[in-house]
Length: 246
Image (tube, rainbow, N blue to C red; front, side):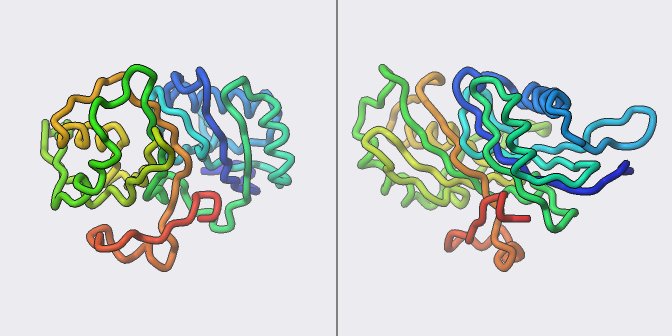
């Protein structure tokens, strides 16, 4: 149940610097406390143990920075989204920044369920650059009919082909790689998994400390293409940012 539900906002924020070492649950707790400090009119569930009606779009791995993180928040009062951004951003510590908020037109819209893809920049820490000419190996890597990785779940280990879920892989700068990867719950693909498979193809082993990963944006499928099904992988789907998928 909702108490005093008046407005639902989708909020965009960044996570940089030392905050990249803060895990997902601690990030959620931090924003709950910041919303209270900002005296924003958050809506709460009813009952004996009310909690803030707040949901995050996509967990971010520890050690990964981001320029495009999202959460949905229900408010008990109408409020100008820009005023919400101003007041919440004023409570942020170094490393967090609230950059945008929009009212959600479809109140049943849920950021977590909409997540379908994400963009990343991948670089290498000083001293961990590959010893091989990795840029020239990208076409051969993408030309493979399948790229198998091992995933571990409740049922144990299984082999998964991630090739359909690597939408883009290209050079962005001399030492920076751009990746667009599937990020829905059914096909979530991490940059480190892609890079481990890439190194393995080249006969190299990726150090667990080698990568610098920065998430740039999180996407939903465009409404007109969202019903096409995940099995259609002959061309890249069309995307919109979660801030547009309202």
